[in-house]
Length: 83
Image (cartoon, rainbow, N blue to C red):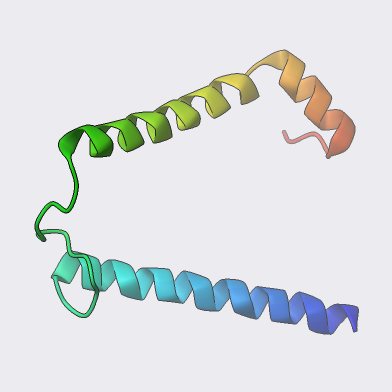
């Protein structure tokens, strides 16, 4: 039972990854997807800037926090230490 669940999880992850790559090809090649790279803008500029800025801030904050020794020592109590 456990091996079957692990295999199913791996297969589902593989299919999602493959679908993401296929969608990316369509997005970049301007075919077979609803939104393309060269498509018209569908929203205001301020909304796009706000979303991009918040995603960039989330990335930067996560990496800044995870680089701190306090986080690393807390994390090694949960998971194995990476060298």
